[in-house]
Length: 518
Ligand code: FAD
Ligand code: DLZ
Ligand code: SF4
Image (tube, rainbow, N blue to C red):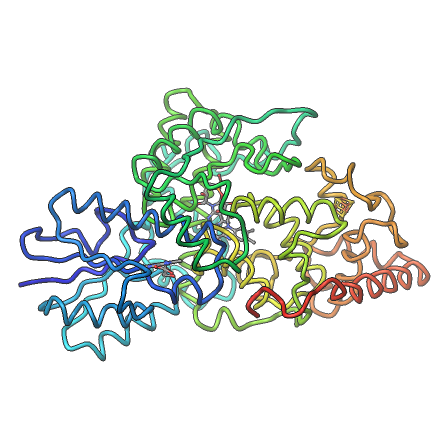
């Protein structure tokens, strides 16, 4: 029996379920570079370059192992530009007895796969994605039809299931979560470790040229490309992280510093999401570092929670609740995404830095995404679909299974509380406490009202006023609503007027036609 094994660009692992029982003498592995995957949203140039380069390296590695690989290049004559078109052509070339694929990371492609089962002349077997620690069905069974799903409960189950950081039935150190020890501000003048950079090799350079020529209007720079594109380099990045960053990862996890886009973060999400590393091996490395005294427990646990907890949780939630999940808009937000999300040109210094970091690196760390670009979109009432598209475009690690719950649920509360018990809304004081952005800003973070005041300050109260009907009964927002209730009418009117003036000015900088494909 001859099997055609179709591997998608974010499934680049030798032991991914579609390849486990591969027979090198008879089977063919198919990888395809297709226009549609680069343009269904207009991805950041670096994200496209990262994936195409990783695909080419993976194909070369398994070819060297003696496996027959059919690799379709982006600019090859006859390339139909879509997964379905290329699979049909490959079936005609190889006449396989059947096709084996691993389930994809996006609902959109899942629907395509179901179509292949109906329409192709050969059987199509869709296998579960064994790179995750919690199978879709297990999460679905846990979630049932409950309305709210809390990460912390799920995470404890995953610790028990995997035995990671466990002593028998008990969590190592006697607690499940050491977050209270984390979240420090960076000392002034602090110099974080260097990023483990991986300068482009010949393959990556060729891809960078291709992307620059084919997708010149897409957002983002290619110059600073430094992502690992092979498994060997991704393992090096992991080793670098564990040695240089993990020992203080928790302490500075929420800190932000102008000109220091990476700090103590792992920079492993692109490699993890594309299949160069598995969640399990990354968690085990961090666990080992703790066991051998190379990292304290608060850091190892905090890091492991992000992967074993958050990453598995958002993926489970996505598949348990799609496709309806993407359609809700609990706070009825409808404003257009401001143009400065594409240009970085805004007088708000925090946003300018986070957006320019994103342009330069196809990366911003969690707190930049959550508390700066995300918080602003929440407070300004930006249409969830437009915010989601932005996040899916701009980050090298963005695939819908992970982007959507983070943006729709965690940041925008558009799911009405499935993911988080309250919106993460915050005023300028939070950004000032966790960063050095405010000192160099043309707005005054301490001023509450007037044209010179930090917009986050009045937008925060305006958000609570505008959403009072939906949110004032939320026990976790009782305190700010009590404060709001104590404000006199003049103060409230000033907040509303400042917010109205500011929000009305948001469309002013947009050139025509907009670059974002909206
Ligand atoms: P670190 O901060 O070092 O964290 C380690 C690892 O934990 C990451 O590599 C990642 O695999 C995992 N992780 C941490 N937080 C999360 C989370 N909330 N959800 C899932 N995994 C997590 N992550 C993506 O991989 N793709 C996305 O498209 C994405 N979109 C996001 C959008 C928003 C608005 C927010 C708030 C978060 C988003 N995240 C996304 C989660 C997180 O911000 C990134 O995983 C992280 O910044 C990647 O950088 P790192 O590898 O240096 O992570
Ligand atoms: C993101 C992406 C891009 C830009 N290009 C390709 C490609 O040419 N070929 C491919 O197989 N995959 C690509 N991908 C990743 C897919 O979009 C991803 O597999 C789906 O979104 C499912 O997660
Ligand atoms: Fe951002 Fe406000 Fe600080 Fe300026 S003052 S950097 S807008 S939080």
